[in-house]
Amino acid sequence: MITRQRLAAGVCALLATLTAGMAFPAGAVADETAEQAAPKVNLVLDVSGSMRATDIDGKSRMAAAKQAFNEVLDATPEEVQLGIRTLGADYAGDNQKTGCKDTAQLYPVGPLDRTEAKTAVATLAPTGWTPIGPALLKAADDLDGGNGSKRIVLISDGEDTCAPLDPCEVAREIAAKGIGLTIDTLGLVPNTKMREQLSCIAEATGGTYTSVEHTDELTDKVNQLVDRAADPVVTPVAVDGATACAKAPTLESGLYTDREEFGQHRFYRVDVEPGQELRASVSVAADRDVNPDYGVLLRAVTVHGREIVRGEAAGNGRTDVISTGLRYPKAESDDENAAAEVVCLEVSNSFSAAAGVKTTPGMPVELTVDVVDGADQAGDVASFGLGRGWWLLGALVLTGFLAGVLWGWISRWRVAVWRTN
Image 1: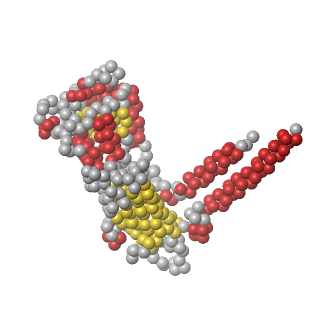
Image 2: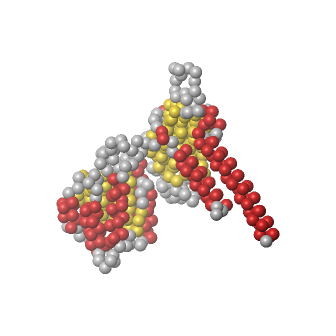
Image 3: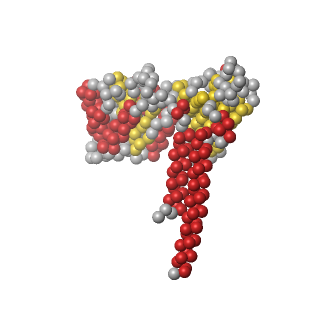
C-alpha cells in the first residue's frame, strides 16, 4: 500500500536527482583524464622526547609509529612519490634555538624503495624538541615542483615548542602560496591544546585532523590519506585577483584559488560570447577566528561598473565556509562578427577578525568559472534557471497533486465503508 509519506519521499528523491543533474552541467566538469604529474606525499613524524611514553597498546608511541609506517610503506600505491621528514630526531640539548632547527629529510620524496625507507625508519629514536612550524616549511619545500596533488601528513604527540613561530600561521602562509598543498594532521594523545593546534593547521589548508590512540587506527588513517593523494583530482589554479576590473586577470572555464583580505574586493575578467552563458560560484573559508554575522557577495558587472547580476550569502558563525553563485546568459546577436563581452566578476566579503587574530594572509577563496553554450535562451531564462528540466519538474508536481487527490478520495471511501459496516 502506497502511503502519503512514501509518495512524498519518492517525489523528493526524483527532485533531488533532477536538481543534481542541473547543478553539474556536462560543460562544468573539468577533464580529470588530463595527464598529471605523480602525486606526492610527505610523512612528517614527531620524534621528540615525549614519543618515549608507553601508552599506545602497551608500547611506546615511537614503536607504534614505526609499526604503522612499515605497514603504510608496504601498502603505498606504486604511482605515489613518498618521502619522510622528521622533527626533533637529532638534538637532545636544552638550547631552544638549536632545537627548533632540528628537522631533517629522512627519506627524499620520490619513487619509493620500500626496503630503504623501512631501514631509515628503524634508526629513529625519541630525542628532542617539537619544531612543527619549521618542519612544515621544510616539508613544503620537499614537495616543490610538478602539477600533481601534494599532501603532508603530520603525526605528533604534542604541540609545537618553538614559539613565537606559530604553526597555524605557517600553514596559512603555505596555503597562500597557491601550490595546492594539503596538510592532514594526526594526534597520538587526547590533548586539548595539541588538538586545537593540529586542527588549526589542517583547516588552514583544507586538510583533516584525526585523533588516534591505537596502532591499527594510525595505520588505517595514514593509508587512507596516502591513497587519497593517488585519487584523480581537479587541481585548482592559483590566480591573483586585482583591486579593479581594468587590471584583473582574464579567466577561462576552470577552478581557481586566491586569497582575500578582510573586507577586500577582488576582480576577475571573463569573456562571454553572444549566445553563451556565464556560470560562476565562489566560496570563502574562515580559516581563523572571525566575528559572527558576515557575508560574501559575488557580482557580475560591466567594464564600466554597471551591475548585471549578483549572488550573495550570509553567515552567523556556525559554518567555516560560505558560498554563493550566479548565472548570466548573453543573448544571441544577429551580427556574426559581434565581439565577446568582457564581464567582470567582483568578489567581496564582510568578515572581520576577532580580537588578536592576524588578518594576513587573506582568507582562502575558491572560484569556479564555467562559460557554456547557451541553448534555448527563452526556455532557460524563463524557467528561472531550471533549463530543459522545467517540464519534468512540472510533470512531477502535477503527478504528486493528482496522487494526493486520489489518495484522499480512497481514504474517504474506506472510512465511509468502515462506518457502514
